[in-house]
Amino acid sequence: MRPDLQREFIDRVTPDSYEAFKRDINASLGMEIPFRVCEMPIIVSHAFRKDLEKAAIEIMQQCVKPSYLQRSDNTLTPEATVRNQNDRPLFSVVDFAVCKDSDAEWVPKLIELQGFPSLLGYQYLYASRMRETYGLLDTTPFMGGLDLDGYLAILRESIFGMHSPADVALMEVDPLKQKTRPDFIALEQLIGLRTVNIRDVQKDGKGLVVRHADGAVQRLRRIFNRAIVDELDDMNVHLNFGWSDDLDVEWAGHPNWYFRISKYALPFIDHPASPCTTFLNEITETPADLHRYVLKPLYSFAGKGVNVAPTAADIATIPDALRDSWVLQEKVEYAECIATPYGNNKVEMLIWPQDAEAPIPVMSLARSGRGALMGARYNTDPWTGSTGCLFV
Image 1 (cartoon, helix red, strand yellow):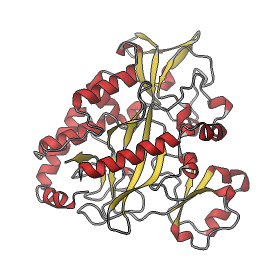
Image 2 (cartoon, rainbow, N blue to C red; image 1 turned 180 degrees about the vertical axis):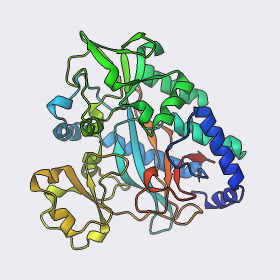
Image 3 (cartoon, helix red, strand yellow; image 1 turned 180 degrees about the horizontal axis):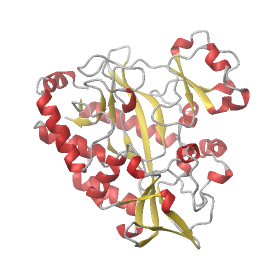
Image 4 (cartoon, rainbow, N blue to C red; image 1 turned 90 degrees about the horizontal axis):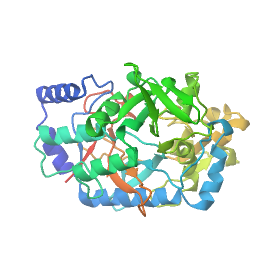
């Protein structure tokens, strides 16, 4: 981390410059961003970037070991299991808290991980506009030694595969209402990826098609899936196809990995960056020092259901039959690593092309906040919210 450069940057931000930045980025997207945009990027050294990349790659490699994959079969239900799963996740996200060790050195600590894509378009837009607006020309938003051309090449290869963009779409439920809509727009601007509503996708033989508002019918040869099964169930969305159907379609990010690589994987990770995590049903006696733990449901997103101050009564209310769907994770102490009061952040997105020996770190997603939870929805005060990293 570079708190010296962070403090220097803060002095350059004025209310007028911040409002101008937001107007510019909103104009680029043609919409108002529905979450709080932080006033500053997180400025990170290349040395710490390498630490983050190394830890993330090693953690994700543990998640594709045969022994773990066999255990993670338990996460798949017959009705939500998609056929033709590949042998590793194409997209993954590793969330780190930035902490300090006993020698006062910066270290990453694993908070969560997912085998599911995140904001691959918006994060570039935010970081690049910050870089341009404030003249941070000696920084880069990219990881893994990438530049813009290399990043876009990986995005196109991963999302479109061997298909024409006309045969590929991002699929989400009610995308116009999603808080992640800025990312959908940014991806269309960057690589020409269209977005479709999963409600409009229909089965045609073994294929999937979607009829657009202009009447055109698009055959989907490959799908960049952003629809989350849990959310569809919560919304009682009726699909015109079944996840388990025998479909002639490729998945850019196979849906099964959403379940396999999730909080479910946390108890199996053996890594210095990973705090101790235990399935609730495997705990024979509730710890007396519960203040040192966080209680999390396995399948939730954006921090929903996470209890950062669990009590014995909270644990007692979870029925025995559901305890295998919860974990108790050792709490980590976020470092005050950026020059705002109690600034914390977590980062990292990986893409793992099928011909690559290891995941490729590509982009950071960061959250800055002063509260117990880091999701953008929980941080709405000045100098908090959605941000990204610039590496110097």
